[in-house]
Each structure stands twice: as structure tokens, then as C-alpha cells.
Length: 380
Image 1 (spheres, rainbow, N blue to C red):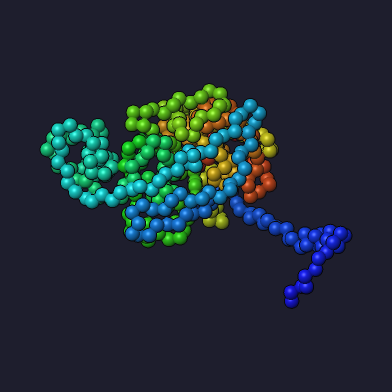
Image 2 (image 1 turned 90 degrees about the vertical axis):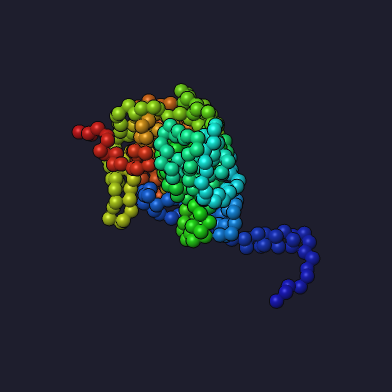
């Protein structure tokens, strides 16, 4: 029933306003309890709509939802900038290339043939069984593989490219047979999943394109270099390294890992009774304990883009070896910084899903996680 129109004055108006404000409810928040990080990919920003099978250029970059606060940094350590895949977005501009045959002309190179046909030079080399140093001869007939190709721009990352097209970066890396050190080059053409494959994707597959895991950070987070550009050498002290600058990793692994903290093993590597896979070990340690680099290396990543790991630090050690440190409470290093074994890189915290203080520690050989206890010295 509609209330009659009244014209309160004085104290009556004040009372009416107080009664009205008291009716505004507060919104409760529920916290979901989950175990330590597993191989299930942690959710990040919500997915953008996926293109129809008829569209040549797929989806645009999705609107990024507010994420967690930036990781705490220790005194005299600059706040990390956003990662490269957030700084430089990618416009979906792939072209469809029909399969054909090309006859090599004087002065041709695989890259020149790639520019003429629109197909990737690496794809042409693979289908024609041309190995490094990729020599071709005049008059040679080359198969040009058809498909949908994206031309990489300077500074683009694999993660940003995958999000532009609404497909997992891991799938693109698989199609292009990318290998360590996963460096993209300006002008390189990456073959993408076909329109038919994209159209048949399940909702889970579409959502997975906008989630990150450590494999994505390892293989698709570095910005593409210009054709003859080299990665920059690491810095010695904590200072800002632009996210659009690729950083060189050690050429060789020193051959030794050490414990990043001391404490009891709370959760071991491998598949547990719950069916979940733990890609590292969880080590109990008081909050605020210094976390030290397990081996000499370069800081490849610092951030919170995988919520299940909390604040995460990744170090590259050379020869494809990588170590990961999750649940940090604060950090003392920045991306692109050179570190030595035993150097403090962060302070320990707790899991985002448990109040028990601990460190989640992983060792990876390339993308593959290995049992850290097989590479760490005995604690006896």
C-alpha cells in the first residue's frame, strides 16, 4: 500500500532519515577453505565471450576484475609493476592461410617466405623437415601448412595472445611445439587452434583460457623480443625492471639446490588420498621466517596472479631448472634481479586457505614438477 505524502520538518525529518538508513543491510563474505596448490588451474579474471565459428578475429581482451592487493614488499624494495600480459594487451588479428606449395626463389629465407604466405616460418620448417640452420635452396618446393596464424608484435606475451583469442596458452604452445627458453620474437607467426576447435570448446575449456598456472608463467609470461634483440642482463640490486623488458636467465645451472627454510614437511609431493596432486612440498615454518633462494638464479616472477599460491616468487636457475616459493608474507626481491643460493628473497606467511604458517616450495625441470626431496640435501 502506498504511503501518503508527508512533509516532515525539524526533528521528524531527522528521525525519518535515521530509520531509513537503519534498513540498509550489510553484506557478509564467506571464505572458501581449500587445500594446498594442486595442478588444478586457479581462477583469475572472468572469461570473455568466445567467438563464433564464423568469426575470423576472436574475442577481445576481457575486462579485468579487481584482484588481490599487491604483495607486501620489504623496506627499500620497490613495488612490483603489473605483469607484461596486463601492461600490453593483444588485438586479435589472425589471418586464415590456405595450404599451398611454394617454390624457393633467389634471396628467399624461411622468414621471407613466411611474410609472403602468412604461414609461420617454424611451421614451414616442421612440415618440410628442415632442421637448423634452416637452409633452403633455389627451386626447392616447400609445403605451406594452412591454418590460422597470429603475427607476434614486440612486447606481446604468450598469455596475452591466448587471452586475445580465448584459448589456453598451453594449447598454443603445444601446436607450435615451443621449447625452452620459450622466447617469442616480433614478426613470428604462431598457429592457433582452428575455428572448428574453438567452436567445439566446452565451457570449462573457455574459462581455462583466462586462468593461470605456473606452466603459463614459465612458458608465456616473457615479452616478445625484436628480431635481433637479446634479453637484458639481470640487475644486482632490487630495482624496477620494466615488464616489457625480457630478462636473461643463467646459461647454466650450478647443480645444487638447498633448503629454502627449515621445518617439518606438512604435505609431500604427489597425489594424495583426496585425489589432489601436490606439485611441491609444504614446509612448516613460523610466519616471517626468511625464505632463501634454493640455488643461484634470476627472479622470473613476483606476484599474486595464481590465488592458490598467495604471493609467489619464481626463480630461473639455467638449463630449464625453476624453483617456486608460495605463501610469502612479504618479498625482498624484484623481477629481473640476480640472486645467489642462501639469499633472502621473501618472508614466509601462510596458505590463503589455512592459517597454519608454511612455505609451498616447488622444483621444476622445464614445465615438469619434480619431487623436491629428491634434489634437496638430507636433513639428518
